[in-house]
Amino acid sequence: MLDFPRWKKIWLWFVTLAFAAASLPSLVSVSGGTWPSFLPDPTVNLGLDLAGGSHILLEADPSQVAQQRLESMEEAVRGALRKAEPRIRIGDLSSRDGRLSFMVEDASQVDAAREALLPLTTGAGLTGQRDWRIEVVDGQRFVLTPTQAGLNQAVTDAMDSATEVVRKRIDALGTREPTIIRQGDDRIVVQVPGLQDPKQLKDLLGQTAKLEFKLVDTSALPSDIAQGIAPPGSEIVPYAETSPGQPTQIAVKRLGGIKGDNLTNAQQSFDSQNNEPVVSITFNQQGGAKFAKLTTENVNRPFAIILDGKVLSAPNINEPILGGSAQISGNFTVDSANQLAISLRSGALPVDLKVIEERTVGPDLGADSIQKGLIALGVGALAVLVLMAVSYGRFGLYADAALVLNVLMLLGIMAIANTTLTLPGIAGFVLTIGAAVDANVLINERIREERKRGRRVVAAVENGYREASRAIFDANITNVIAAVLLFLFGSGPVRGFAVVLMIGIVTSVFTAVTITRMWVAGWLRKARPHDINI
Image 1 (tube, helix red, strand yellow):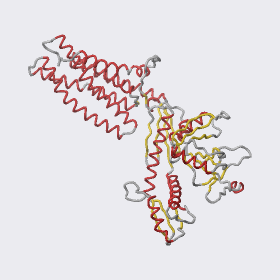
Image 2 (cartoon, rainbow, N blue to C red):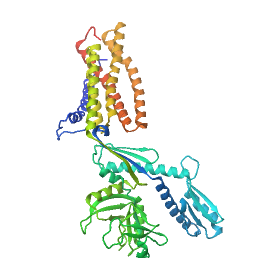
Image 3 (cartoon, rainbow, N blue to C red):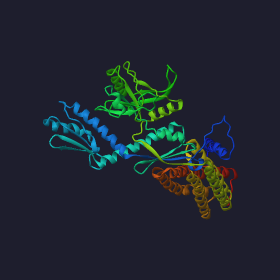
Image 4 (cartoon, one colour):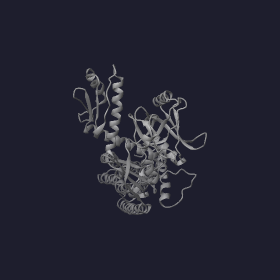
């Protein structure tokens, strides 16, 4: 019991004071003071309900996912039949009513066509269904119909991907601890603490950033383009910005282009010739090879750079571009070019997201919540401190000192870990104060029992700590399990409560058991009392 060597005391005091000192910047910030700039300043991030900020609800259109699947399947079907040995020739491919249909020219190749198309369909999750149904009608006509199970799985995958893209974009803005969660089948909730003007955030999240490079159809007549008529195999795409006297739209080849999925980097830079802001992009090895092939096979032909369905520019391919990098220009400002670079780096949204709800939480509400939370914290702490001191005397004062260190360590660890404190987190603080002295109550009551049994002071204290520690650790392990489950399955505010609870359990056991034991051991070694008042 009295075996606390000097090195162990130094180590325990170092750990305790280091974490407690880490709480000082946060306490100074809450009190309205200024922390010296030359000192480290780990601070606890305040959540949306405390610091104010923006709440945005985004919604996707599932029908867009269905259209994208249809286009992808059309391109996959053409490629699979073209690569078949021998090549399978088909008539016009129709995509009406959400289905694909085509006629195989040679009836003897129907079975081969089916074999070529089967690998293009996969299982839809755990439903046991395929994502596409392949039928042969009238002997030679194939009809590919998307199943509902396949569409549901595609929407789920698209929303999961969109959630991750949204997270990457917000992280690139430098905001701290945003809350980004799925809501229902087609909605995403975004909460960004400290952001009072959500315009930049809405502009960033509203941009799909779907980048494409497609060849311009030079055979299209300007008169037809003006009327929205495109040649077979092409489509009309509008320009993002036009000048007086210039065409407002252009015809491009619908298939065979390059998508921006193979980008590895995108940075805002400046054009070396006119010093205008541009976005420099870099492809990975696969994308660079595709881009090199496209530009090599189409020298002296124009190709369009299309972003979110609008043409930014349609430059001419003067020579093959073999380096795997290119520049995107389009009357950018530095801010808009940087925003586009962030969107491209984080990836394209698989579906368009529309803001259907937006609200701003003012900092005044957060300040009021902090004030009331601190009042509750102070009242609860004072009541506990008085009760422990009155009930257990010297040992109660040790418990009180451990409680103060526990709160400071808890706040310091949260600051170092860069966690977010929400209003439920403050409730976790209050709960921690009440629960932190449970260990000391168990220990002190056990010491009383040991003294009543006639044990000497040192033996009573040693048995009290040893026997009570078993119950303390068992109880707190169950609390940690509950906190972990809250964190894994809870939403933002509930997870904030769980974080405070988990850290508070660890610090309370450390201070209530280990630190108080060191203090009691030092007092017993020095005073050698014949009796204790507990």
